[in-house]
Image (cartoon, rainbow, N blue to C red; front, top):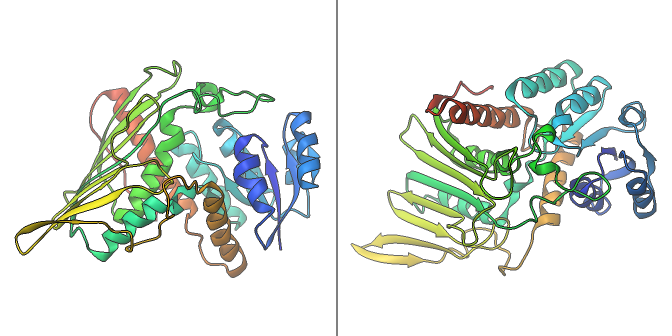
Length: 353
């Protein structure tokens, strides 16, 4: 049994971690930490756990094996390093850190402590992504030449994701590490690395604060170039009343287009050529599907992530999302921010292995 303590009981800590952990065999949630006593009172009633307002109480608790850090992004590195130094395994919400230097310090702390460090890249298990990955691995598209991956939304929901007891708008505040690139960039970059198995060598990035944010961006556009010739576009916007396709992949043997929303069933179609004739394929049987476009997989993603993590903690194998993979995601995001600041294409350093 893995005993868990959560630091940060906002929406992510509550909905993506505490609630799912109640349903996953092999874990026991024993304590939570939050600066809001009102949130703690609700958590004690909902989950029957010990509560505290100071993270040190979680870190010093000898019963806790795994510390989940669901505090705002600016606190990820310091809390993760403190947890690792205390002899705990650490799971950090994305983004892993504010920058690559912080991420490297976290990896070094995990190596010194000989404890597991991972990041909550739960979108690795999105059903639309798993479908695209299955098709690419089956070779349905042939060699992938260009890959476009987008998350496009509209409205105040993203800007007010936080809870009233803390700060509903922290995701659009620079001091807390907010911004659309920090929010969605890690997911899109991690999926891209997993899907392609390749490492880009150059990035061109533009960030914009257009409608919903002033201190941070509510739009990002990354163009990644690979030594193989592959070109990848990653785009995120909270300003799109009508979004572009979630996925667009052009391969030597076929082109894939997927509409719909992230994490839900998408209308996916492939245009290929058979006997010199164009053919449209509907790949419902090529990978996992939800069976309906209205299906939200939030709880399912947490169960998949925590199931994989449990196996890693009990067998000693690496988790699906290793600390080095999360660190390499930060390396690409760091290079993207540098590209925007310098208004030019920049080189991306080699990945950590």
